[in-house]
Length: 363
Image (cartoon, rainbow, N blue to C red; front, side, top):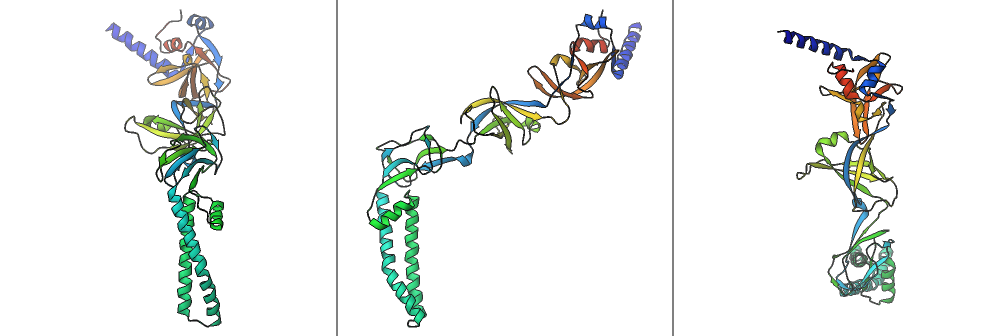
């Protein structure tokens, strides 16, 4: 019975101390407990997540260059890694299909020219009232149909890879040329090349992959249970680098294989520290608007699922509850009811916790 009474007295005493959140200690007791003091350090940002990332090219900046006509590759002028300009020739193909398309186009131009005289004659006659409207309608309809067909064949030559100047030269000289130039659609870098000299390629066969590398993204796979810690606009820093990025896209579905959600961040400005396809380690940073502070991990005590630090006062310490915003290698980012001028116990929080709860002795 006596032991039960002693235990109740201890629990009542401990509850009283915990409720008061005050801990009185002399300087001698501080020294015996090995307590170290320090001022709070203001924190402007916190690392909310560390995650691996892959450097990727934005989809809109990557192009597949395919064969506009079937034929034989007679020359390749670009290799993987080459920087190319828009409309620069990447390869040359000898294409019999191109010759056939050119013949059809010249034939259509010839028919347009032959019908032009009849069109202009009947146009003059209808204006003078010499011919009937029906005849004019037939003449103009036939002429417009031929013009439409010629324009359609011209567009097919453009799709086949001929430039406007080359088509104009063909119309003037009537000299057929089956040599087709494969050109770059953008200013960029050649990422892939799949053709060889002497190889026969089919229509629309992929030949090159060209991309503009002025803008790169980071692709991160974030555990879905951590997604609530991230929002659009959060900053992403690459470890051991000055490169930073900004979160611009958050996925709406969970990968069933690893239960992650894809997050994409746009890298700021042009840089050369990272390369497309590279896998790197990143930190997602959140900037803090309200006052926050950084303390060593040894300054934090845990009790009943809550975190505390010990703020120095004249009599000893005030046990102050805190919210831990994030963890770093050398400490934690916290917020609580204190100011920058406060001095806290940065070492010995476990010993102070024992004193606070009446579980230890300073002697």
